[in-house]
Length: 111
Ligand code: 5GP
Ligand code: ZN
Image (cartoon, rainbow, N blue to C red):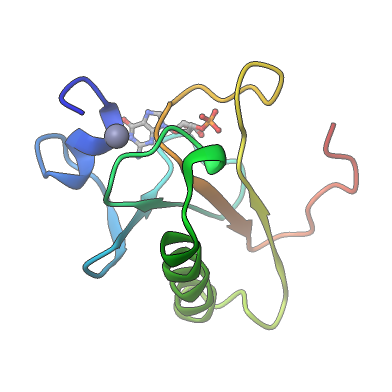
């Protein structure tokens, strides 16, 4: 999608701070981090949100999360995954992304 911010980051048209990349998944640091570790994990193929995600992409995202948690040093201490979806979910970028946050004790409340 030519007008999608994250598609542009994946294509290298807008600089992203790359954390992880393979043929299906790209991960980069959030521009406005909410935690010491705040990585956005996205499929390279455009899909609006989790409602459009297929099983193969979900597996690739899970595998990437496991590798990134290890490389970012939060696999042992723990971390949070969030994927905002739609209006009430306060999704602001309409390209599926998983927030991986950690590196501090996160608040219990989420909503
Ligand atoms: P959402 O609110 O859709 O769940 O999350 C979108 C996230 O994208 C936000 O946390 C926001 O800080 C991040 N973001 C927005 N624009 C950019 C950008 O240009 N570069 C990066 N690295 N992150 C961005
Ligand atoms: Zn996109």
